[in-house]
Length: 206
Ligand SMILES: [Zn+2]
Image (cartoon, rainbow, N blue to C red):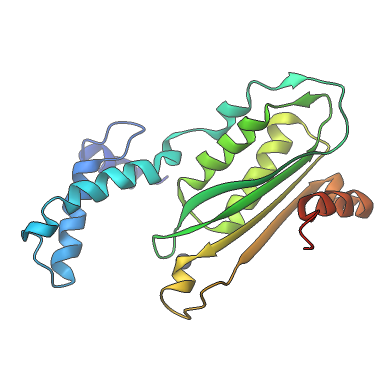
C-alpha cells in the first residue's frame, strides 16, 4: 500500500484494521446525489448507513489474515488426496463492485500436515470477502495451502456467476466462470491431476 493512501486513511481517522463506515456513508450519499437521486427522501435516509454496514461485512476479509485459520494444522500420516467440494462463497468483483458468487472446490495432497476441513472453508470466506477477481482468488487459496501446509500439491477450482456479466454489459444470465489453480504434484503429474479433477467433478457428469 502506498504511503499517501496510508496517510489518507489515517487522516480519515480509520481505525487500523477496520472499515471506515462514516466515510463510506458520505461516499454513498455522494453517489446518490451524483446519479440524480435525493438522498434525503424517506426511502433513502438510512441507505448510506446500511450500505456502510454491508461493506464492513463484505470487505471484512481485508482486515483478516487467512493464514491464521491454517495455524491449527496437525500431524497426520495420511498422504492421499483430501478434497472439500462445494464450498459456497460470495465475493465482490473489484472491477464493478458487483457480487459474484459460486462454489470453490479444494483438493490437496498432504505431506505430514493436514488441517481441519472447516478451516478450508474459513480460508475461502476470508479471501472472498475482499474486492476480488476470481482468478486471483483461486491462485491465492492454492498458494496458501502450499505455503502453510507444505502440501505436495494443491488443486483449487472455482465456479462462479458474475452479476457484472448477468445484469449489465453483455447480459449473459446463466454463464459460469470456471478458474483453476494447480500447484505442485497436481501441476507436474498428469495422473494426479486427473485423479483430483475426477474427484471434484465426480458423480456430476462434469
Ligand atoms: Zn466485474
